[in-house]
Length: 409
Ligand SMILES: Nc1ncnc2c1ncn2[C@@H]1O[C@H](COP(=O)(O)OP(=O)(O)OP(=O)(O)O)[C@@H](O)[C@H]1O
Ligand SMILES: [Mg+2]
Image 1 (cartoon, rainbow, N blue to C red):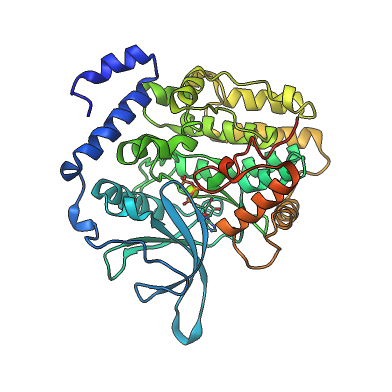
Image 2 (tube, rainbow, N blue to C red; image 1 turned 45 degrees about the vertical axis):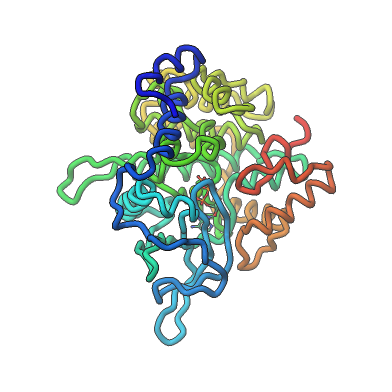
């Protein structure tokens, strides 16, 4: 266990960003002092969790159908509502991983996230329907079910056939994401006071693409990487550290411009088909984030119009003052690129076609099946057959790391 006051010394000796050292020490200390964790113990189930399985009924209102996906902190289930006279509606039901569901601090955070999310209502934001705890005291979050796939998987689907997402599609998707984020940034209380919500975790996994062509951002204000490091093993946030804005590594608070930087990363990665800030260790990733040195997108995607490249790099400026002033301005710039270079910008139908093709590519079909870990497993087998990737190369979520699924550029 690290002694109090050791943080500064270790930070300077490692020359690592303040964020990592603080998060790492904090996480280790929190684990060592588990009984003194903050949070409301009454929120936490005293019974072991992890009994979710298909067919299980939750709070008499929902029935689990199949696992739709898994992240670092939670599992998302496709479920159905149990309504009167056989009325059924598909929903996404989110459950914290068992190890976290018994952590009072995490549960307090999960409750807070649900509360914040429930106040957002916008077509580009995944809607929160319900939040509660079941008969065992285990919490659940019920969201609108998005039949489709997330943006990370769309990029994977292209990588499997050594393609990249067409730039107009990437831009059209990001324009929609920016609409949702702008609505949250300009949120007001019922009295008309500004009450912005920052997303804090803008990643390709959190961009859901529906088979209808709708684009929705999810996990608004959800446990951000900085907070996660304090309640989980630092290793579990690794995949997310590469989506932080540089100023967050210097302990600046999340802001509209940190979200904007996150959107810049998502756009860069969707175009490039690879991770922007990646490394073998958390320290390496955070050092890259802190430096914010971004390879020119045109070197990877020569087909991208210069105005689009400029927009990408403006969003990814290390100094927030050199970025777009807000996400709306970024959206306008991207829409201008579409207008100036195309007779017709991709509409919902074009995105829908893209989503359907990607689902077919991943072996998901175009029907009502979800994107489950089994589907990822299928994609891995396709990938292994094509390029000889071993299962060791999968990341914690079971997905194939993006850079592995990309053969050449
Ligand atoms: N509303 C939804 N409808 C359909 N599928 C969803 C929905 N929300 C999430 N998913 C799927 O479930 C997966 C897991 O979601 P989750 O938010 O738990 O993890 P993540 O976003 O991938 O990573 P992390 O939670 O670590 O940030 C997502 O990647 C997505 O494919
Ligand atoms: Mg998510």
